[in-house]
Length: 312
Ligand SMILES: Nc1ncnc2c1ncn2[C@@H]1O[C@H](COP(=O)(O)OP(=O)(O)OP(=O)(O)O)[C@@H](O)[C@H]1O
Ligand SMILES: O=P(O)(O)OC[C@@]1(O)O[C@H](CO)[C@@H](O)[C@@H]1O
Image 1 (cartoon, rainbow, N blue to C red):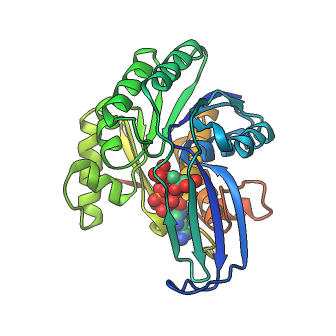
Image 2 (cartoon, rainbow, N blue to C red):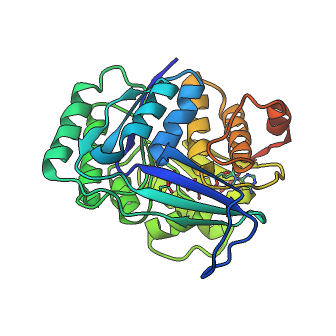
Image 3 (tube, helix red, strand yellow):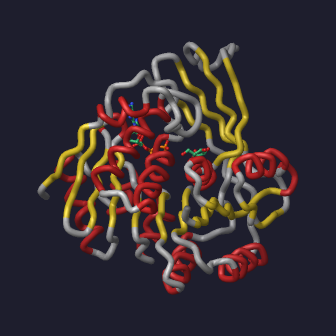
């Protein structure tokens, strides 16, 4: 069992709605809806906790609607280290249609002030002992600058902690400057990160390699239904998932990251790790929420993942 801290600076309550087909501008009737304590880092925490890791969750949480988060952290067995801020944590709407199309409507988040940011830094510094990894995931709330994120990652690195980063836009650009040990961009995020369009797989791979040469040891490039490419020191692996029936792709990236971290923490080979993480994220798209490895066909799902070494 390993100890992991996840930082979700901008958590969210995900309102997931399933409907046959979205008809904008008219009354739509849902087939199913649910509200879940989420945000990228929390989703990662949920998967890791399910795989028996000791997880602490932190970030900034709105005081006015914190009850569902507190219930969820308790249920996952995660230590709640969130700094409370004024107002409400955002509600993000996830509309999943029968054909697999997903529409995300994400809020901006509760504003965070300097005092809360200082409190978070102090708390992390005090509780960093014996951590095996820190995951920093998701967007930044109003008031938190990308440069602050960079400084935060820099401080964690100075404490000798391996930081895994999954963010987007300027936060990813700045966060990457602090050299986390791993980043997990999807193709759009990678293009944003290098500041140019990446029209094909060759362009994507060479951009990922560029970041690696710039000091990021691992780039986990997620490619949706096409799978994932993992560039690490000394090699590159590519994994393709089996075809699955898509219900919602919303937590697939978080599940992929968590599955990969699980394999690394367990000391598995990279091949086994990537196979597991790819199967777990394929399961995630079959349901609303994160992927599960306790499903009946999980071994078959792992066996159906195709992993190969790439030469770049
Ligand atoms: N249709 C699919 N079928 C099987 N596996 C999938 C599918 N879509 C995604 N995956 C798996 O999930 C992983 C992550 O997906 P994706 O690249 O869409 O992440 P993302 O853009 O970070 O998603 P999000 O931010 O919504 O969590 C992929 O690398 C792949 O292994
Ligand atoms: O707005 P961000 O922070 O980039 O993403 C937030 C979010 O879309 O990411 C998770 C899925 O990956 C959801 O639980 C959550 O609503």
